[in-house]
Image (cartoon, rainbow, N blue to C red; front, side):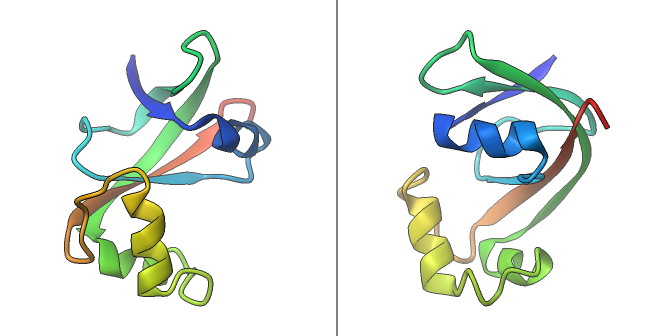
Amino acid sequence: MQSLDIVPRLLPEVRSGRKRHTIRWRERKILPGLMRYVNAENASDTLVVRVTEVKTMPLFSVALYLDMSEEWPDKVLLDGMRKHYPDIRLDSEVDVIHHHPLQE
């Protein structure tokens, strides 16, 4: 099964269904279907979701695409992404991975 690591603070949001996408840069290719999130600090803590769609776009397009332009102006989005990917730029191609919990 395909999998991605996830920071522990985001797992409760994914489990509840409030978080339904993730933005990834230069990670393994994810396809629609089942995917396991693995807690980056505790590999025994996992969650399976169904990936419904993967869109590739430059980072500067993500906020508008996700209707988050007010919350994520370019600097805020870039600073947030650099916590995980220090070399990312606004013109870097990222994958927006859409998913939902399996209980739906």
